[in-house]
Length: 555
Image (tube, rainbow, N blue to C red; front, top):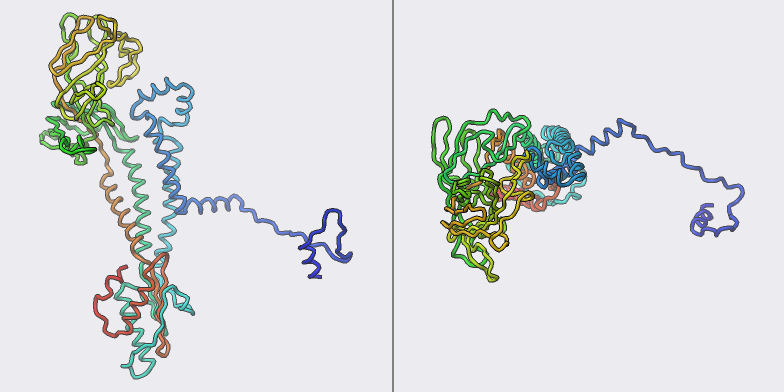
């Protein structure tokens, strides 16, 4: 019957053929196995198990980094509400959709906060059970030797040469005593049995792993606390200008959700001079590369005035906040007169350097809202070292002030300053303005070397008086900086322990002079076999040279 059944499985009958089964054969019984239902509690346990795995924690960390990208690509309402309003007006339904999903409030949005909280819950749920397991492992004795030590990755057997003892039992005991002393010296925990020794070391590996994840959780919490209770602001300072730490003095201000701007520290910061040097001796790509940026500043806090040199990556601390040098450039001093010869605008105007131009070619605008008759605006390009390229175009050949030159075009009309819509001081909206033209009807081009003056079609004039330098500073107060430093140190320390300390078990067994040594590593450990060989060598030699294998013991 079995043979006919197997044959019928191998050769299936064609469609319409008669079956060869006998009439007395019973049909195969149908399976009555039913899949168990998890239920609501089972699904919750499964979801919690998945959430508290390290794999999910790493995925959430990556998702959090991806979720922060829109915050750097799109204007944020907490930083620049004017740009957000302009974006919404320019993009219509698309802008409204982005606003609906909180793309202009990324870091306080529901979805970003949810990812952040899930990451913290995942880390906590992963750390707590692993800490309990590690605590039990540290308090428990090393496990006894398995029956077949030869199956271990590191294994060696030999005949003991303990000849000083009177009996073989005493020799075996002396051998185990020597093995225990050697293993203890190497940092192993010992579990002595009648015929063997079980030893284990490397508990700091798991300790380092836990420290790493706890420090990662601390870093996450620290960042959250710092963003809630700190602030960050930006300001551009021209040489000779003084900044008072008040809300209206900032160019942009980003307070934490729970920071009270009325509690800003009281201090003043004055930029005396700014010095920048660039390489004019090197050839190729190194020509014109910046070499130093030094800003001499004067700080006043609590009635005490001090002088400092502010450098890149070398902030100045004043009033409990940090002042960081983040940028620099040139501010041409321009004087604008109306048709009556009255000065309607005068002083340094900040021009923003083109980040891709090593010659510091800079762009900027000059707005003159108080001129008689009609308002004026100028859009210009500043060249620190003006020269002509092969096509005859004006370019800046070097970043230092060696031949400063200012090129502008002028507009008259409504600057739009009274519309109530915030405007950038570094751009000009010429939609309601008319471009100035020369006597031929062509667009007016204003070209000025230092000290030059050019007449305007409306009877006024523009004078290029000189150039001052400016710096861009980032002023921030973070109450968690010390905690962040501690967290970073713990992250590195925990990572180092988990990477470089091996977790290893060793067994030494002897019976009637026949000794076995075996070792097993938790994870990858290429030194397991060498550790066995070194231990065997020491046990065969009753007086090993001290420190001979000290380096290997630490591996």
